[in-house]
Length: 163
Image 1 (spheres, rainbow, N blue to C red):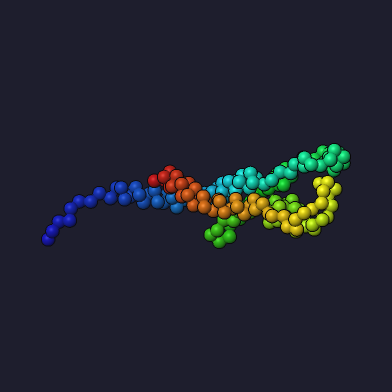
Image 2 (cartoon, rainbow, N blue to C red; image 1 turned 45 degrees about the vertical axis):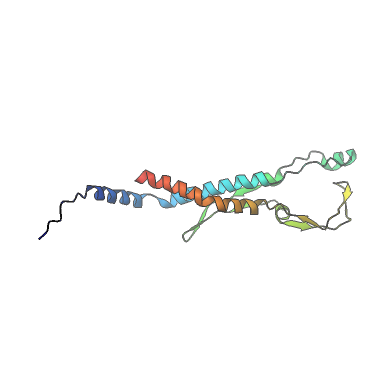
């Protein structure tokens, strides 16, 4: 009968211990941490894309004093917030919202009545449709392409600590 030889199982036993250590690690906390990081990146992209209102240069001095006194832009940009991460089944859901009442009109565009005079602008409206800026839509699409590489890198570092 042939001899099979000798075998050292110490490295396999160490691997088994590491795998047990990995199962004891809180993977849910890691997923929530990554979800929050992705949400923060999305928030930064959205805020950068959000337009800030400025006093129009063509407004008369009377209109500037009457309608634009004390005006500060940035309300729409400052209103972006992240809601807490929710877990539904095996998915982590991140919600980014803007509670400003006109946010959807800036995002997707809106209709207006041509010829209507707007005193705050000091002129009549020309176009019947104002195009949207798609701040959240474009930022989400960009992040969806970048997220897999980011997650792969972070997961590699996470597993590297264990092994």
